[in-house]
Length: 423
Image 1 (tube, one colour):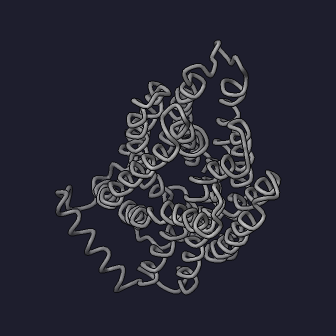
Image 2 (tube, one colour):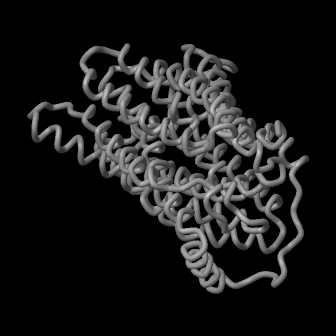
Image 3 (tube, rainbow, N blue to C red):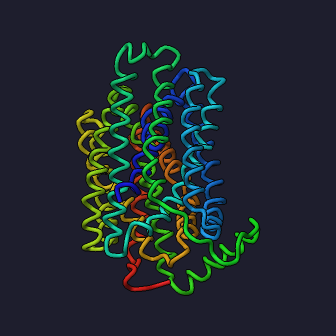
């Protein structure tokens, strides 16, 4: 289990450092252009990446299932992700490099998501129906804890000091750029145990299919799911909504901390480390509850907690940074369990030999609505400006994310757990 979870640990820098707390913030900073321009550009590149993932994830997962090369493909994707992370070193803080950075970030997001499909599919090699919640929680927790360590490493080694290790300073964004090399090395080294333990499975009968044929087979899978297990389809829809809300919490949390609560770049990183500790430990603990009480209880409780704490951030935004520290950490306490139990819920449903395909469908449904959180975030800010006439209504954005989470909660409520239906 620990070796399997090393992949979560090893690839976490892309999620924590690159897309959330450091590089994405760096790309939207003033040296790259006007704040509105860089933020809109980030939104466009993220949306395009999401569309490609939605198109490719299920058929590539299906192809990996049939070829029997699930782990081999995962290995190559992981190495590609490491190289993309390292290539961000060349993105200097100037307007002409904005789209270079955004393009690399988008490609990295696609690679990371497709790799995640294959990785999720390998859970059947290390878990049984009786302990899949604990295994999934351990993996998510290991990822968050890895994120903490790499955040603290780059902060104290390069970003925090005026002159960091090897004489690195903030001039020309060198502290951020060198941190990208650290992310590359981290991924290459710490994913090794997973590739030692995980093995390719025998290829499925029928061999390879063309891309067009793969989409035909995917449609047949969806129709079969609807006939034999409609609640699996309901779950995919519900999880698409609430996972997009969870993504919004991370995507815009650092932005709100800076723009509304006045956090410095260093404070954001320290908060990110603390948030990862809370999310990681809660994911591990929730994994135990998942196996005892079922994943739905964990998911529903987490979503209710997220909606309430999101409202607290909105209502008490003018009470200072302490509000964000308290409410933000409580939100992170619920994010990890929701993510982990969502994976274990689906893992309990999948028939043998279909993991890559179904987890690919899981990735696709999540990406189909990936525009919701960004759109609702921006719409809520616009609404706040119209109603209050204030210059900074960024804190209204949290209401947009709360709406997405609440929608996921509503759709999830009638979904029956795996004990009530089979594929």
